[in-house]
Amino acid sequence: MRLRVQRFLTQQQLANALGVTETTVRNWEAGRSQPKLSPAQYKKLLEVLQITSNELPDEFGHPEEQNDP
Image 1 (cartoon, rainbow, N blue to C red):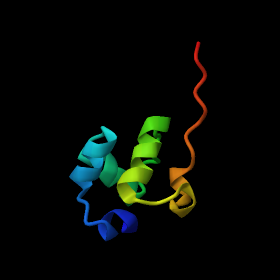
Image 2: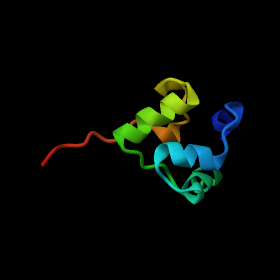
Image 3: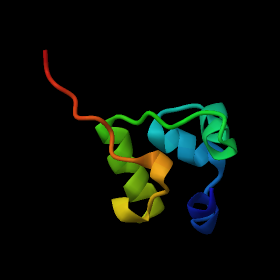
Image 4: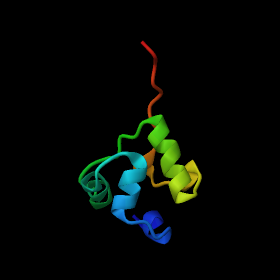
């Protein structure tokens, strides 16, 4: 991921920040899976990459609204 590399972050560092595995980040970057981030993970991703939501690639769209049961 270009944004991760520009921030000098490893896949492991990004994974740790988001609470996922390094393999998960690797699969996202290789296009083998689509990110399914919680609202908290989404906010953390923006914070770690120091960007706005408009700067994210399309596959990192806004997480679905979560309704409380």
